[in-house]
Length: 480
Image (cartoon, rainbow, N blue to C red; front, top):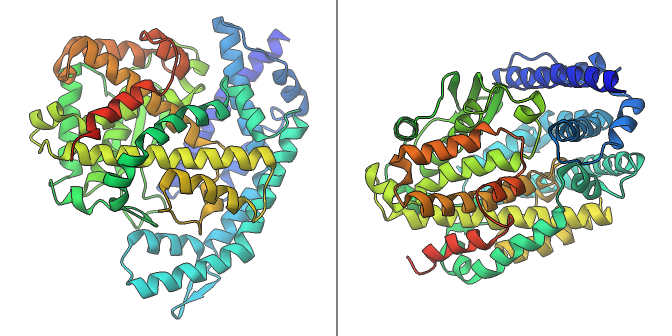
């Protein structure tokens, strides 16, 4: 048994490295077709029922060996879902890229339509027409494929003796996603008047409008990069081996993400280059991953460097992002302090949006409403979280098979606690105090060994909850 587990650990390390490489090659546009499928085929002896049954019996025990095995179990089960549903994913992907939609004399793919709408360069009439065309295609062609995919997710869950996908997530993550929804709901209720008065006017059905904050300051990613070099120097953090690759709208991927090729060692931070608050925020965010991964203890086991609660690294990203609504940081770095409130408005918007997303996902998965009736569930939660300003044409697309919104929300909860502790220990200007850098570096060094709940206790809190998030909001409640 021990020999088999050790062999599996080695296989999973090799597999995970290959997955990361495939992701990076896909970004560069040099990957071969069906590369992920080939990975599963190459490791078909690893992805077997015997292995999954062995791992299913691993229970949580608080010691390093059991902790590592539990993380291995979680990673394997996640990949098992991907393996068992890959045919559905392929069908969905192919349907997205085929130029089957006729509009304005053009043959467009669904992916092209989404990019056109994101660019927001159409007049109101053309935008409405394109959305109507896209909606018809989604209802007729795409949504049924996605419903079939989630039906298969349910079948996989049942084959693993889980009631549903949420039950599986609760088991391998060691927290109840339903409880997270209730926790963050306190924040949603507390901030609703504020959101309606301050944030709501900046939101339309398509998303957040950055025009007001962009007119207040000349945001540039080059300047943001200088900010991060300043922070790194003051905090005495390592970034050796981290590199930035700038995206453009012409690339396959034009959003931001992190490719941890080696933790620590080599990290690729992929992010858009250009002007605007959101581009600067995205660079801050990805640098949070860089600071975390490049200062992780290299002697930790592979599981503790790679596999664990993604809320932890999201929390460190959120701490770095929150400098944009720290007046002391803005003053020292030469920004207008007036942008602090505007920057926080977007944080409030994101928290409420992601809460709406995970709340709807929990109900849809628990009731297995993988059909058009799921839209009613989506509408119910987004009306509460976004107060009616949201677009439901893409509601099925907002669901994902990793419940990423839960990691984001837990990351914001933990980030608020970390910020509160930094303020308590080192004051508003913690970012120029080397001792604060040492304190954070100690957290970074832990990698993924501890989850967000445990990090919360390590820094002195009784539990991970919404109280610091609400206190953070209070700082901006009375400010315009």
